[in-house]
Structures are given as C-alpha cells and as structure tokens.
Image (cartoon, rainbow, N blue to C red; front, side, top):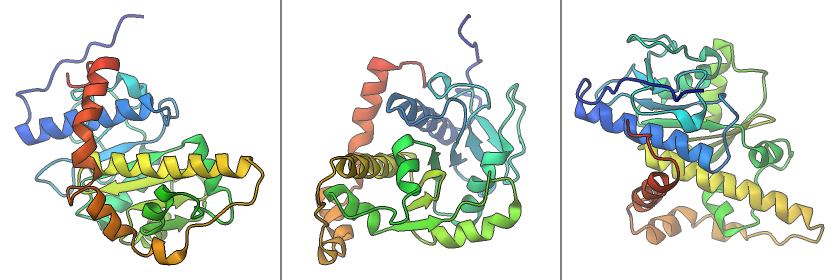
Length: 256
C-alpha cells in the first residue's frame, strides 16, 4: 500500500501551533517506538498554544508511527473537529482528555496509554509499590481512578478530575496509565518514568523472592531529589533533544 500523502500545514498555521504539532507527532512516534501503543487506540492530546478550548489529537485510523505534524486533527472540548480534516477522531477516548484539559489549564499535554505492564500493575490492589528508585518519583505525585467501563459518559469526568487532583500521574484501574505535563516533552518523560516503574515492578514480582521496599522518608524527598537531578530544568527539557535525534534516525518524517 502506498504511503499516506498528507499536505503540509507548515506556514498555514502559526509558528507556535506548528511547533506543538511537531512535538506532538514526535510523542506519538516515540510511544510507538517504545511499544506502548495499542494500534490506533488511546490518545495524546495537546492544547493549541494561545487557546483554552482547542486541542490537537491523533487522526483516528492512523497507526502512531504514521502520524505527522500535519495529520493531527484540531478539536474542541467536545472532541468535535474545529477545522476541516479528512480524518475522524475517536470521541470515546477524548472524554478523559477533555475532562483533564478543562480542569487543568496549566496542562499543555495529556498522555494516555494501554501499555501491558501499566495495565498489569493497575490490576493489582496495591498499585505502585516502592520497589525502585524510579518509583519514588511517581509515588510522590500519583492518583488512582477506579474502572467505570469504556470512557464514554460525561458523568465520569468529575470523578476522574478529582482522582487526578494536582498530580502528574494517574493510574486508571484495570485500564492503563495517564500523565500530564506543562509541555509535551514533560508529559512524555513522565510516561517513560511511569511505564518503567510498572515494568520493574512486574519483573521484581516475577522473581518470586522477598521484595525490599524504599523507606517512606526517602519517598517524601522525591520532588526535591528530582529537581536536583534534572538541575531544575525537568526531565523533558534534558531528554527531548536526544529523543528527537533518535526519531530522526529510526522513524523520520514526523515533522512533515
């Protein structure tokens, strides 16, 4: 089958929107590269710069490794297209994203995955356990949301928002993982950390031996330690340029 030909929007949208499109397309490609994708399902959404009610989201039907900056669809809080696009959107998944974007205006990006390790931990009653250095950074800003079926109903939104609170990480019980970020790179790096924590936990439990937990007093200092280790820049600012270089080598074309 021939590659999908999508006309470029570069120069037809603002420079700020184009940069957001490039970063969001890169995030989709990276999710595919790290094998957290679920075919065409789940979403990463990003607020259109300078707006409070318009967002960019994946065209429903494209695999994550096919998404480009120009193929992203612009929608409102109801998940309805606000500009012409040949691609539909998945309104069911956007229920989650619209709830968070409406409540957390500082969150430029909401990232949700159905990763296998993430779902496995979400099904465990104890949730995330303090088993690794990585886990302390997640546990310091983590909420849980009980499963209510496929996210189709608006009445679930207030409970979802309350369960996330001011946290960065949300474990959707029996469902998957969600992160928010002030930037797209920050949301992606939060998910990299979250999924790593879940993978380590599943592997540690599979070993069958007695597990050693990180003490609570160390977990309490996680935010301070995070600021120190990232030199106050945040993980997104530090790692994103290198991630884009990796994409350029392995999955080029996202920035079209």
